[in-house]
Length: 77
Image 1 (tube, one colour):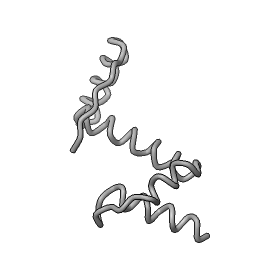
Image 2 (cartoon, helix red, strand yellow):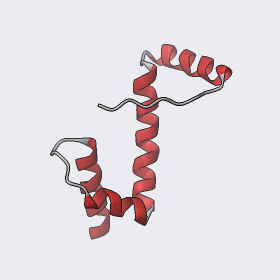
Image 3 (cartoon, rainbow, N blue to C red):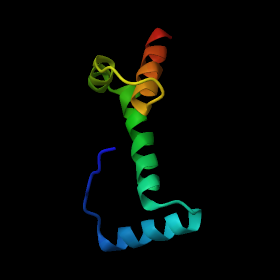
């Protein structure tokens, strides 16, 4: 799995850390879930993102594979 780094203001980091502690989830998982949710929504709405996803070949069971299947299903309706 690839890692990414990004900056966040101290006060936002403190809130995020508190929310994650409250919910019993680590920050990496919480941020990944948030990004995943927004990315799927945008992929279903944005034709350019759809083309990028559809052009790829993905291992069955991966998130990318499921996203491609979801886009294909949406296009069929």
